[in-house]
Length: 184
Image (cartoon, rainbow, N blue to C red):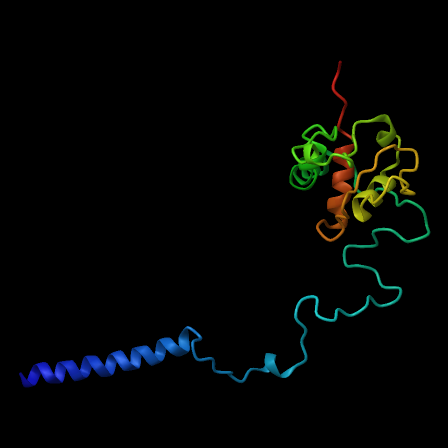
């Protein structure tokens, strides 16, 4: 009987210690440990972002210079670029523009007044690579868009410059150039 009482006390003490340890380890009770990371100014994501310094260039190079016209495609349209562009197209564009780029994607059925552009049309094919790059980067907001003044569609495409790197957007342009209208 005495051994049973001692065993019960040992288990009770272990349970209390284990419970206290779990309170601290699972942050039920938060302890602010001193660290050097906490002693410096920091910002949460998108909390008061600092403006881009004047005359600075992004790490991956300049995408385009405003007022200098459409940029020139720096990525060669080789097999690797087109393959990367096909993967990016499937992820970012296919739901609206369709598998073949004709504007007949699964989402296009729900876009009654604003159909996606047919990327195989002669009007789109007639645009230079830089114009397509700017449309992917900045989006297409209205039918009177200065990038496509002669195209009669009122598509509203979101800008993809936040989702895709500069080289990803050029890979997409290279892939769009390979899309062909179906033979009739």
